[in-house]
Image (cartoon, rainbow, N blue to C red; front, side, top):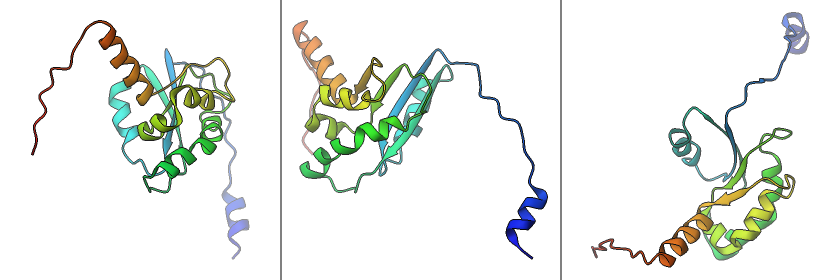
Length: 148
């Protein structure tokens, strides 16, 4: 009994046609290989009208400045693997700590290296923009901080 010949005996070919229905928004997400919750967290947030495509990028799980800044070398290639050849509306990076250290503009450039013209974002950059906008409007943070 040969497994390959057994497989070929039952092998069938099915036609493939790509889906032509497009959601109003397609998001490409690069997340860390050690992040087990981001996709699950995002799905309820984006809802059924948004398509979320993601890939994982190697991360050792060690959280040091060196490890986080070293991710810079892997972001562009990881981003290229998110739904290749599909049109995406925005690219996102899922590591806030690395984003803070590498820098918002650099993260955006790396995410779109193989997709020029596609907007890119990351949580760290959005938090900084929001804080800046609130500050410029004279808003203040009235959050009560408790010490344990």
